[in-house]
Image (cartoon, rainbow, N blue to C red; front, side, top):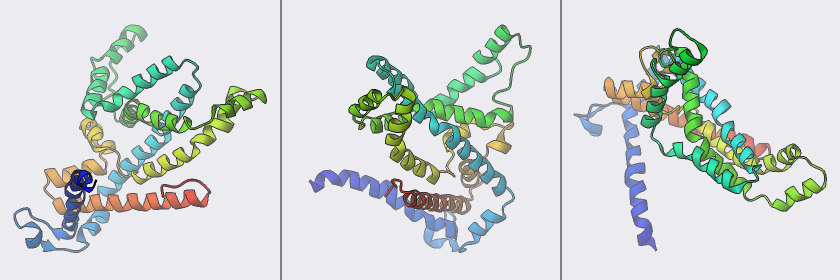
Length: 289
C-alpha cells in the first residue's frame, strides 16, 4: 500500500516542498552565478525595500481592489446559480445548463482572454452590434479604456469559474433531505421561504469555508489573466502584485526582491486564512479546521 502512495508523495516532495527552500533568496542579494551559498546575505533589506518602494502602494491598491470586486460579484454568482438550478423541476434541462456553464472552466486563460479580445476589439462583434443596431458612430475602446479593465476582469472570472463553484454548492445541496421541502410545502411555505429557510442554511457551512479560502488569496489576483489583459493604456490600474513580481524578477532580474514580495504575499494570505477561520468559529460557524 505504501508503494502506491510513493509516486504521489515524491511528486509533492520534489515539486512542492523542495522549491520552498528557494525562499532564502529573499534574504540574500542573490546572483544565479554565485548560487545560494555564494550570494551575500542582506537580512530583511528587501522587505524594507518593499515598503519604501514608490510603486508598492499603487500595486497593492490595484490588487486589493480587484480581489474585493471579485469577492463582491464573482463569489456570490455560483451561489445564485446553484439556487436557481436547485429550483428547476426538469432534471434534464438542469444537467444541460450545468454542463454548459461548467465548460469554460477547462479553458486556459489564454483562450478566454483571446475570446474576449475578439469580441471587444474595435472591429469586434460587440462594436459592430452597437454601430448597426444602436447607430453608434465610433467604436468603444473596451480594451484600451482603463475604466473597463476591472469590470472585464471580473466578468471573465464569472464566465470562466461560475460553473465550477456551482457544482460545489449543488453538491452541498444534494445532502438536503427532500422530505424537508415537502414538509415545508405542506405547512404553506412558498418557494422563496423554502429557499430562505432550508436551502440557504444548508449552504452556509460551504459558503463560510469557500469565503475563508478566498480571503486567503486576496493578494492573488491571477497573474496569467491580468498579464494577458495588460497594455500601455491600463497598466496604471491593472498592474498587480503578480505582474509586479514578474517585472522585477524576470524582466529586471531582481530575483531577491521578487521572492521577498512573494513571501510577503504568502504570509499575508496565511494570516488572513487563520484570522477569518478564527472569526468564523467564534461566530459559531464551520471553519477550515
